[in-house]
Image 1: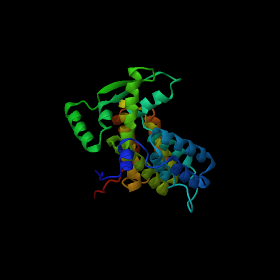
Image 2 (image 1 turned 45 degrees about the horizontal axis):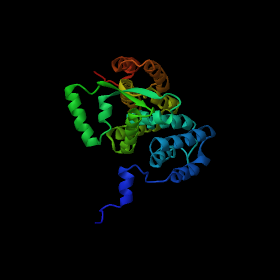
Image 3 (image 1 turned 135 degrees about the vertical axis):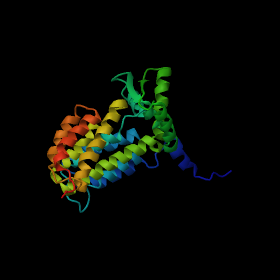
Image 4 (image 1 turned 120 degrees about the horizontal axis):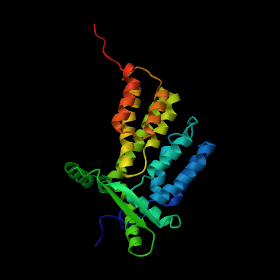
Length: 288
């Protein structure tokens, strides 16, 4: 019986074989290398190796194509490319259960056992989008989305190692998950806002790059950081770019907001901080 799809493609999709070999990503890196600033080249090289180990060569190619927006023939030198490159690599290696399990198996000498807290919505996010959306709706109705659960991963021999290996294998399904699509959209929006600010207020672009620092980790801390990041973009950066408020010194405002966000305040507290910065600048219709 002839299969309707080439068996190689089935293996690539469901058994985790990368659709491209590592040399394809390495070739793309070699094409970009002459155009990379010295401080960014080594960061990008390490990131490619790291992302291939985290996922596959295709994933590293996504990273390189994003870097290629700022480096290449007929493109002006980008002074902040090293800052983008390091933060983007860290964000693309987000901490999900397969990543922590993989790290536990790889870094056996560091610590044989790793514990990581996740929210139930993080586990639901590992499902394909349609299934994940249904699960998240049910969890939201039952108020279980933010319920914390601690997973333990161990490289010790026995059932604990087999448990960890099973979780690590789920990385092959990562690219088809709701979480992967959400993270991809986040990185693209971050880069989009960098480009907009670079065009309107170049002196503030490093502040937008550094907003990535408040997003990281897992569980409640991760969701807290995402909420604060969205708040900074939606209430401050985007209104400035859209002209919804009178021109302000965005670089100075971002320094104040990022300093406040470093303490991981509740989103409502950070929102009040932003409102105080932009309140005098809001464009109000004139009354006669």
